[in-house]
Image 1: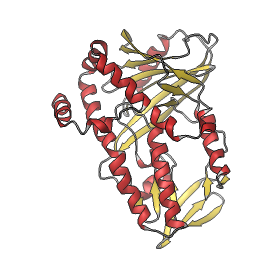
Image 2: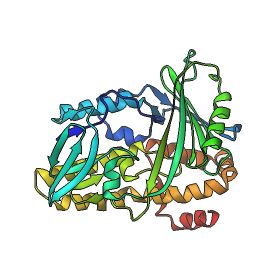
Image 3: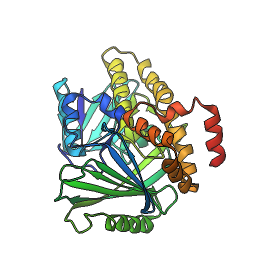
Image 4: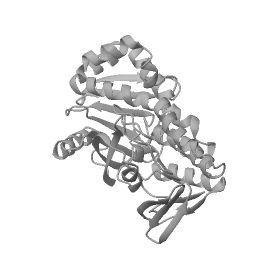
Length: 347
């Protein structure tokens, strides 16, 4: 197996770096060690006001930095036998004959019997396969230095002023990641929201390490996941939970499935494994995307209702924690038809 990337590792990636229980259950111990802070409390606000605390004695979220997290994953792959070439940009994907894929790169061509594309929302493999986005969101983030390490086990989440927008403060060992997200096309409003959200934090005058932005997307229900011998995973496939915009667990789970499919297709010469990958993603991951999209529709119209439920309902607060730990998932809600009918009406 060969892994190529346009950057050398470790490399910075814009991301909140929150790890839910599903993600923690997949990663090896060496990668789990990159978690810098364990979270046992989340404070929700509605446009910066009316705080609601959700807590549990045992931590239910982990915070990591993507440069160290991704680098640890890469080293695990190399330890398992993969080769890695960095600073190698993908220029074009071609299938000149059935079962063989040619990748034109910045330093020549590569030929493979199967390719897993995990090159992000703006990567070439997603465009080659034909992934179409249901919606694209803009996320803006700042990382600020933290001098006082106290209360590092608390995450802050804010239901924002724009439809479906929210902000976060994710603590790491020496920095706070402060960000906001909403649908693409409202850059000025998103930037104003970030400035106001940063100004509400105790670290508002702290030195900034960096200020970045990124796009997230989720796929349409009929969006392809495979073209010939090329399959896509993670952001490249538009695999993302629409309401929370949580994507790390989708990248990890789809990456495992895609890697197995590619191995069966090359080593075992079982070409049906690539078809099975798409079927498995539709069965295991797409339900979470469907329910997340419905919940986002409710949240866009009725953020006050969501906040009220968290404030008044212990069951709602417990469900949030159970979602974070992986004890339940949004996909599980699809089995409760009464619930789906109710939230569709609210949406």
